[in-house]
Length: 395
Image 1 (tube, rainbow, N blue to C red):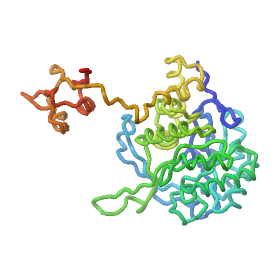
Image 2 (image 1 turned 90 degrees about the vertical axis):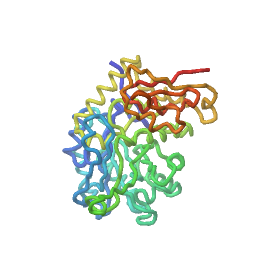
Image 3 (image 1 turned 60 degrees about the horizontal axis):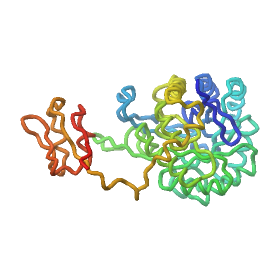
Image 4 (image 1 turned 30 degrees about the vertical axis):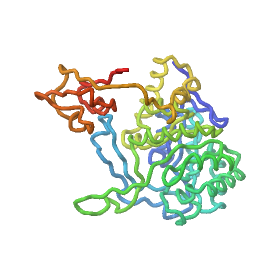
């Protein structure tokens, strides 16, 4: 079987599947279950001294299109889940309880922290190192605080390159552990933030976290459930997150990158690795599908690598990145036209309804394309439910 091991900042992961910080890692019991499910690494739920972020709102989870989760379709998770519900010194004991199992099963234990000032960031990093963590992750992506609410915490600090750099620098002085910075895509440019974190000494970055969202119930005319803003993500987010991993590759960031946000299955993991990620964090999909998804993803990755002849992760990392076509080199000369296979057409009329060039029409309940009007945009090909339309070169 392929070798799934990867090395990040001097730490070896037996496989690149890392359980992200959240509900699946809320306690020692939960973290141990993730380890025994064959995760290559786990990120603990974020430890903080802020008492308001230690108490979870109720309810705090909402699913958009829940039936689509198990149909392998796009879904969204909206939540207001906060941080570890224990005081840091108490939560450190959960890290200690997890440490021996992590060592036994060769799983990397990453501690997530969030301070409100430089002193707290440093104190938390020292505490997690003493507790036995292998790495420390700086949660600069959530909670989704607005700038100025708590100046050095979550998105409020994470949208500022200057503050992000200073926080990383302060933590690096307080611990010998590798330091990972978690990037927010919400209200900031993750590439700029990553460069600032690397300038401060970050050994790796996570690209990226979820967005802030607001879901309105149109019958009650109120925000759903808990009544306000929350984090919003799901399987639809993977292409956006992949984009940021690729942008970090373009910028030659110089440190390893964990792909994150929207990762739902082994295919998503492969996509992130192909554009340059060194490892991938999963959380939302595990929350809604359960711990069995971890082993399923690892197995799926093994099978894909074996099928395509990759013996190790390093050989596939970034393989698709070099195939990305820059904007200035996009094909603007090849002539394409749409053609209809009448034997497949079911007469749904989708192509005619969506063709703004009036090239696709319906005749005797069958689609027809006027090649003289067709501009080869490809929308009818993409929208046809039975693959009755295909694009062909005409020059």
